[in-house]
Length: 357
Image 1 (cartoon, one colour):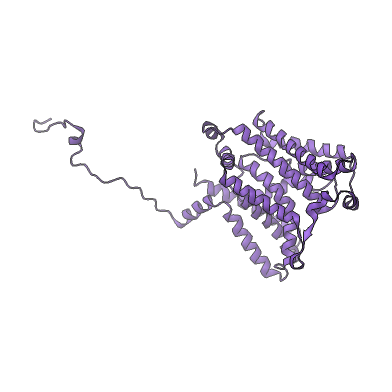
Image 2 (cartoon, helix red, strand yellow):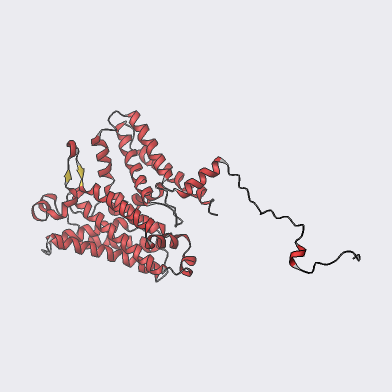
C-alpha cells in the first residue's frame, strides 16, 4: 500500500464519493401478467365472465331464454345446490372437502318429518331439532378433522355412508306425502311458498339462498372470523403461530356447514313437497356442491376464493341445463360441458396461484 493512500478514520469518510441514488426495481408486467394479478385479486371474475358469455349465447340461440319465467325457474332449480354450496365453500376455503353435505341435508329433512308425524312433535319444534341435529353432524366431522387429525376426504366419505344408512334405517324407507304435510304441518313446506310479482313465480327458497350468500360473503370478507377461515386454508401452521385457534375454526366451519345442510334439507321439503329418504340430493348433493364451488373459482387448495363465485358457479350450471334444454340438444351435453368447465376452472386456478408462488 502506498504512503499517500490513507485509511478512512470514520464511516462517513469511507462513504465520500459514493453514489447517493436510491435502489430502484422495475417490474415491467406484460398485459397477461396484469390479467393474472387481477384474477388473483378477484377470484369471482372468471365465473362471472363465463356466466355472462353463457347468458348471451343462450339468449341468442333461444328467444324464450330471457323470459322472466325461464330465469325464475333457473333460480328455483339452483336454490338447494346454492345453499349446499355455501356449506361446501367454507369447508373448501379451509383446504378441506365435505362429501357428506347431501346426506346431512336428506337426513335432516327426514328427521324433521318423522319427528312431526311419527312422534307428534309440533312442526316448528321439529324443524329446530332437525337444524340442531344437522349442526351436530357437521360438528362431528369437524371434531374428527381438527382433533383426531383425520383427512377431511376420508372423514366425510365415511360419515356420508353412515348418515345415508342411518337415514334409511330411521325412516324405514317411508315417504311422507305432500298432501299430508300440507294438511298437518305446513311449516315444513314454508320455503316452497312463493310470491308472484308480475305473474312470475319466485319461491321463498330463492330469497333465502341469496340472503345466505350475501351474509356469508360479508362475514368472510369483513370479520375477523372470516379472515381466520382464509388463514387456516392458506397456511394453518402460520395461522396458528399468529394466534389463530385453528382447531376451533375448523370445528366451527364444519358445524356451520352442517347447519347450512340442515337448512337445505328444510328447503327440500318445500321444494319437492314430500319428505323422502331416497331423495337424489343424498347421492348427488356433494357432487353438485363441489361442482358449483370449483366452477365458482374457489381453490381446492384452500385460502382463495369467494362465496359469490360459488353462486355464479351454481348459476352457470343452471343456465347450461336450461339453455341446452331450450335449444333442444341432448341432455348429456350438459354433463359434457360441465365436465369441461370443471377442468378449465382447476387449470385457471393453478395458473392464477403462480402469482402467489
